[in-house]
Amino acid sequence: MINYRTLALSVAVGAILCGGAHAADVSPLMTQEPQTAVSETGWEFNVAPYFWMAGLSGDTSQFGLPTVHMDADFGDILSNLDFAFMAAGEARNGRFSVIGDVIYTKLSANGETPFGVLADDVDVTTSSFSGLLGLGYAVLDGPEGHLDVVGGVKVWSVDTMLSFNGGILGGIE
Image 1: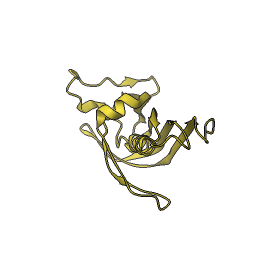
Image 2: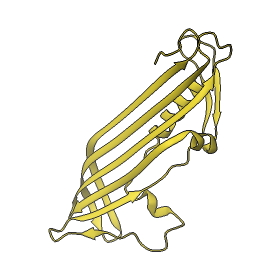
Image 3: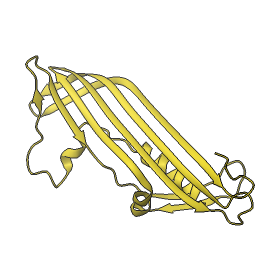
Image 4: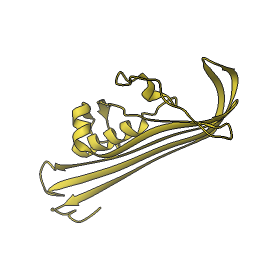
């Protein structure tokens, strides 16, 4: 059951994306306005690292196998988290902008099998990457903010490795 949980957790963490470049602006820990770097060419740059707290609950089944219930709160996910990086950024020159959003997570877990015949235990490691790069044009541009029309490319990749230890499948990845 732990292998289904870890796979589902990694997909859930990787699927959560920031919709805008100012996700960190809503933090109660911030005591001042975010700083914008302006170059001599007129370009303005903003970068906002952020962090999502995720939980997961539901049922899953595949290949006709029995349904398995999953329930993992943020503490469960955090205990299996090896590394995470999340950041959004924007470069703006007048009405034109370039935006980006990057998320990388790596989770791993180990679980014993019920009978130990096929394997004594299974190690699961999963990495998830999501990246967004977009070009925008501000259809509304004012001192209070911008309303941009954006077109871009989004890439999402999930890689999961199962390693069987002991039993008939021992040594297979």
